[in-house]
Every structure is written in structure tokens, then in C-alpha cells.
Amino acid sequence: MRDFLPADKARRERVLAVIRDRYRAHGFDEIETPVVEDYDRLHAGIGGDNEKLAFNVLKRGLDADAIRAAADAPDGVDAHALADLGLRYDLTVPLARFYATHRAELPTVFRSIQMAPVWRAERPQKGRYRQFVQCDIDIIGDATSRAEAELLVASLDALDELGLVGATFRINDRRALDWMLAHFGFAESERAGVLITIDKLDKVGPDGVIAELRGRDAAASAVEAFDAFLRRPQSDHVLPFGEQQIRAALPAGAPDDIVADLVAIGAAVSAARGIGGGDRVDAPLEFDPFLVRGMGYYTGTIFELAHPSVAYSLGGGGRYDGMIGRFLGQDVPAVGFSIGFERIVDLLETAADAGAAAVVLVHDRDVPVGELVALKAALVADGARVRLEQRTKNLKVLLERAAADGYTSFATVAAGQPRDALETKPLS
Image 1 (cartoon, rainbow, N blue to C red):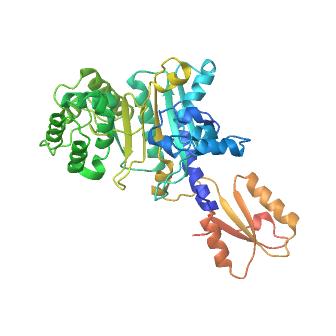
Image 2 (spheres, one colour):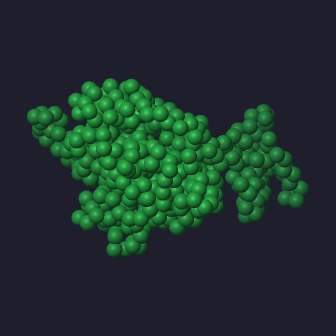
Image 3 (cartoon, rainbow, N blue to C red):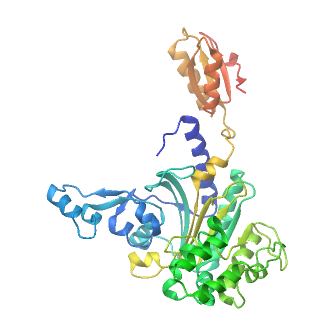
């Protein structure tokens, strides 16, 4: 958990403003949910490993006997006996609860934005914090591939506006993964564990994955079939995202409906971005048959945002058609994407606020307060951002600090000086 100095805070707010503006332009509406949710909801088995990282909130009024009984539970400390609330570890679980609560007040297809902090008891490291901001967009109520296409187009628009060039979406479908594992011969009961191992492919490579699968006591014939598929000869030619690329990356006989859904997403994204043409689909998308994403609630398409400058993903999401039904008692289609705000903001160049003057008025000690405040108010009324600073012996240090805080110019003010005599100079 971190403090942010003024320049850092201003930079973060500029990035958030761009993301919010582009998502709103694509028809998404911003909502806000509480920072705490019920313990049962946060630990309902739909949050994957994040549930283990939740910060729980103790029940009010616990006495020593209740604490002692929870600590002495037969299976270890009974956390549920001690806690009834927890800090949210993502924004998807709160959104599902929000939609179930307010469905009657929302449109049939609801497009939401959430931009807010979440908390996880992580082991802090670069790009991974215990408190961090998530920027989520979700579409609830649309079961077609149009929803995925809208999410991807809006997110690519935001990335373009931020100046993050070269980003690519890696795409897969959990249904394709399940079919592939069945094709190789893995039993349904062991597929969840196999997916956990496959998810490590980028870190441990094919040898590490196969060794771990053999250690899981998975069916030997299935492991060997998967091993042969991993090591198959592949063309060096990079195909555009489309049916040919998808079928080339999967075992022969992949289900037509799954392939068609993925192709439709790529075609829609390409058309929206005004590139490609005819039968060719050319968009910043790449089919990855081994993309897993660890969240247990995904039911269909999954995607991650990649950038060549870093080895880790810059965001991710997917379709989670079964989650809202946990709260509503009726399945509702849903798909979402979360920009990795903390990671993206570290990649972006610092930029000053566009279009608005930011002026430091360096005044002598004897300038009357009334004159200073009136001069400042006049400049603010014209749309400028203004800071008053009394002149110091080391003016260079003062101006360097102002530049670090995002100010672009300065002017000196003497007693009785009229406004039209004010001469601004750049800080750079």
C-alpha cells in the first residue's frame, strides 16, 4: 500500500481520466460499489486463489470465548466464525451482487465501468501491490460475440488514446480448452488440475509442464498425446487472426461453433478499427490455445492484454455467464475486461495536462494579500491552474519543484503590479 506525491497522483488521475472518457464514449456507464462485501460472497468458490488473499473484517463485539472457540476449531482456525465481511479483492464479484440487487432498474443489456481500489494480501513486488486500482468494463445481458468485440474495441481505443503502442490481445476460449483436454484423453475430474499446470507454460516451458502432469498421476496416454501436441512442428509464418490461425493452433476437429465465435470477434474488431478487408482479418489479436486465466468463474472467451516491453500481462478478462446466477438464481450472460492500471501507468510517459495553463506566481514578500488573491482568481477564471509561491533565495529549487508538480510556466509579481504587466516564462 503506497502514498502518492502530488506529481504521481496527478499522473494517475490523467490516465484514469483518459480511460474513463474513452469507455464512456463507447456507451459504458460508471457505477460504484462498497469496498466491503459479505464474507460468504467473497468466499463462494468463484474467486480462485484470490479468495485466499482476501482481507477479512472481524465481527463486531467478539468476546474471548468466541475467539478461543474459532482458534481451536478441529480443522484449524475457523475464519468464518471470526469474520462476516471482507475487503473486495476484485470488482467482478461486487458487480455480480450489484446487478442481482438492481436488475429491475438497469437496461436489458447493461454496460458498466468500475474504477476503484481493491485489496489482496499479496507478497509485494514490482507491479504487484496489496492495494491497487482496477479499471473494469463489463457487459451483462448479451450472450453474443458482439459483447466481446465491444469490450476489445473500447479497450484498444483507450490504449491508443494513452499512447500505448504495440499492445496485443491474446484470446482463447475455456470451451476450446476443455474440448482439447478431452481430445487428448484427460478425464473430466482431472481437467481443473491440468489447467493449473498448463497455466505455468510461460514460466516453466513444455518440459516443466509435462513433468508436472506426470507427477499428477494423470492418464499417461493423455499426457503423451499432449506432449506430442506441444512439440509439434509449427510454421514460422504468423497468420492473421481468423479461422486459419485458430484451426492451425488447435488439434484437428475443433468444434465449429467455438471457432465461429472467435472468428466473429476478430472480424468485428478488425471492422471497427478500419483495417483488413475481404476474407482477411487483420487486428491486434492473437489466438493462444494455452491461455488459461486462473479465475474459476470463466465459462467462454478469455483474453489477456500483452505488450512487447514487458513479460507480464497488462490486463485480462473473459466471459463468466454463471456467476450472476449464484446471486440471482437465474443465469445471465456476462463478459468483462480489467485494465491493469498499476502496470500500465508505469509504462506511460509523464505528460502535462493538455490545453490548460499551469502557472506559478512567484511574489515578493511585500505584495498585499488582496492583490495576490485577486490576480490568482482572475487567472483561474480564465482557465489556468495557479499556485502562489513567495520568492526564496534559491529560486531554481522552487521552480524545479513546481515543474515536477506539473506546472509549465511562472511569473514574478511585485507590489502594485497590474495584471497586464504580468510576463510568464516557461519552466522548461
